[in-house]
Length: 173
Length: 220
Image (cartoon, rainbow over all chains, first blue to last red):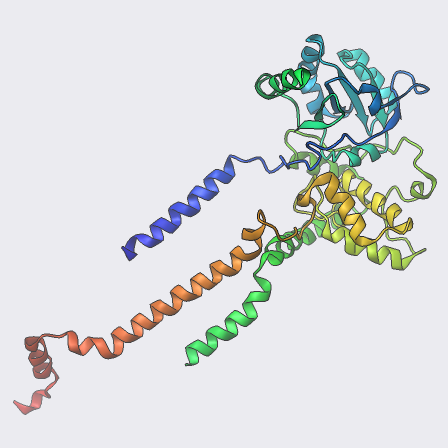
């Protein structure tokens, strides 16, 4: 029996390591899930004199998408965001550490799926939301509580399997 | 007895280095300093192109804020001067606290670097945020709380002891104790076999044969 002990140890270790390979080390669970979305009042990209605050979206199930013109994965994600906007899901943009001129040009070139985008040029609001890599997407319910967060470009799979069912559920509640 | 004494010494010396703190922070920070040094040689100023490239390589699917980006926005007045976080001479006491705090916090972009070592734009932002908070008179504990509330316990190199981190804190010590136990048992068994057991296990014919072999040959 003792002879098999090293092999058993190896199998257990290999099992753990193998499981570790299936995990994404960049997926860090956000402590903000089920917490109220951090409040902010920021100027919008389209009209810097108009300000938007989180409380204005109260009563809606909406998405906050952190994007920037310098962010290549955001471009990759862009069609997915557009598809969601076409399905009637309000998507608000948080333009993160970007230049207003570059951001406006990016939207003009690739299309603007956002209800509106607010600008966070210093990334200070990004810290409040625990942003550490763009794009990031937050699903916020009618009471202004964050229900889901996705780091990295949204894939059609994540939208179909997770996001849309969750939005459906939150809209009914 | 000597063996036992040697093991005791080993355990006493070994344990302080083994538990979670060592596993979590010392190792990771050891790596950091290497990376940091490399940054230092190749790219002395923070915010150059190289850190951005490396950070981008680290993040295959998500992209960090561009380091090359000049800060476009008017930040609040005190933060404006040190968008690039350098130790400032104006308040060495504050800088000391800043360095101690930032060594405790993980850069979420590079993950194995502390925000004290990292040149990632997010680490620069976090350092500036912490510096502003220190100036406002926030305590170290409150600042750590602030970061944990936003980024989770993962942002700390020394996570608090709870059910999810218990294996991290005590796993290494337990593994070492188990290894020592196995080693001691193995050595004892071997010793026992070498001294007492061997002769008694021989059969009568074996013993007779051994005796005949051991007899000096010139007797014949």
